[in-house]
Length: 419
Ligand code: PLP
Image (cartoon, rainbow, N blue to C red; front, side, top):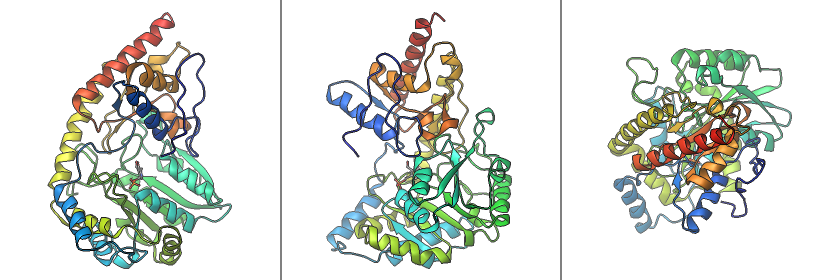
């Protein structure tokens, strides 16, 4: 976390916030978090809906496995690609989702984000075009451009609840397109991919010989109303399970979200055979390896009891239903019911119409005047403008405090504009 980022107070004209690469015009989650912590240090109450982080503890058996590994002296360097036990457990967790996974193609990294970084750096050459979702997680575009590529945003349509339209992807493929980044369930909208959309995207990837980077970090956060095949497990389907797709797909996943392990820093990927050597070389020269005892905790997370995951998802679904209904009761706010992940992405355009204010000003005022930390949708790309992202990984009391803040803030802005 960079301590020197600033969130200016909402006085006068809206000031463009400091941006992260890939977060055009937006105020990133990290920047909001830093500003929120500063307010708390000054004695203010702030509810945190800005960072995508479960509010439950890591399951005790996973903590125990990590502590045991430390006591047993698993404190030395390990293989750069990961310990064999974890690579096998990851491969098995993919096989039960229908992905023909091979442990030798599983690579372990300090977080899913590090896996995204590693694979894009290994795969993208200068001048390559990388298709990224808009709105979308900022790391995709930032790393594609860091590697010398060009991030080409494919829009998720606000008018269709940000559903991914495979034709919008196909329309942006050029002879220079090398990589298609998918993220489902999706951050920031909570959208998922229906089986037909996955098929269509697989077809596009095969037709244009694209590498797919499928960020599936929220795969276990799907709610029973998400569209999926009737016999499917309560986990989002992987595009890598489609015929011929595992050979051209990097499946990115990790323990941060499903197992409430954000601070442990453990992610992994299943990569096409041709990427094993270059990606391993990058891991070697960057991290040397992922903390060994953490990997042992990861084995316990993947192979041990899964009831904590189910309990977390059930609780999140309850909060989601409450929050979305409460947001829709605020005048001018419209919020679709997100079928996956743990973000609500309300549209505040109508609520702010005629006030001269944007979702960014609203987010700033929510934080500084109402103690509600959330992220403006523009932090995730131009198509996110006019929206807010609220992570509902907070207690219902905090969610109620946040909705009261939204109602009061929107009301004040409208009253100020004589509406
Ligand atoms: N991918 C997406 C879409 C995310 O939202 C996040 C975290 O917010 C990550 C990857 C990073 O996960 P990790 O904590 O494992 O690095």
